[in-house]
Length: 111
Image (tube, rainbow, N blue to C red; front, side, top):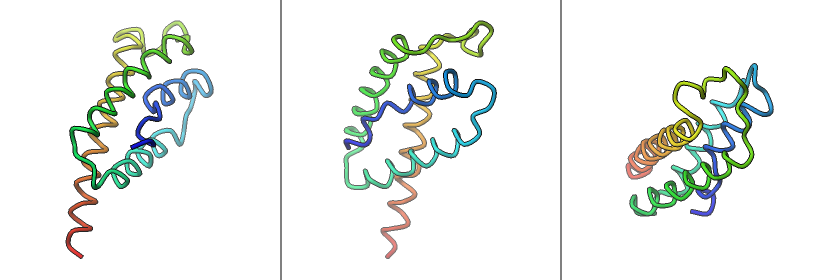
């Protein structure tokens, strides 16, 4: 559960906006790998705890985003806002974690 506390929604947007604004090639692959790792590591954890920890992570990510991310003019944050983009990314990561967790659980329970 400690790995779940890494503020991945913040890191996703910080890396995308601050480090490589034109192309962040492996960002999607790394995010998918991170969600798969969390899904695998939380096989024996109740879903409500996973959701709770991810909600904490989303709130921390919003706070870190307000403190460290300065969106450039004309960025894709403009129509929806930075906070909503961070929340949306956190929810997508949570859903992918839960899907991969159920896939891992189904595959490992067959053995």
